[in-house]
Image (cartoon, rainbow, N blue to C red; front, side, top):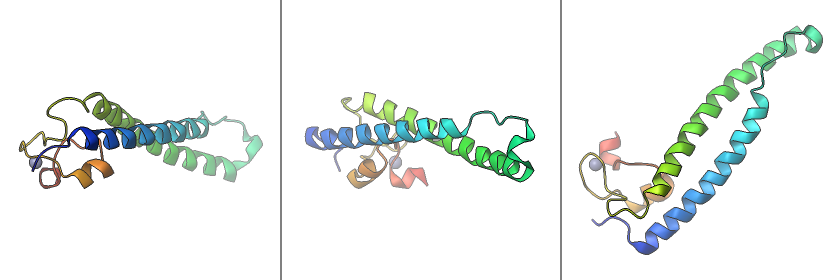
Length: 113
Ligand SMILES: [Zn+2]
């Protein structure tokens, strides 16, 4: 199996660019949900608890997305390198469907397990 050729890389690059745009939008959205919660009781005790719970969820979602974003940017910067699409661990080519679905993956499906 060979790693992606020029055209395949072009479609992967497009995929990455789209994913980055989507993530940046989600991150911006989540950041508005993760503002510090005011200690005032003006919003009421129950809604304050809700706000704290929501904030916890948003914080986790935010850090997930931030780390995926960093990996995608890394993948995009390496897309023209000769070893792009080669598994870091075993040196085999990563299957194209996997690269399309998860362009940030640096190992093949076998090694990722
Ligand atoms: Zn591998």
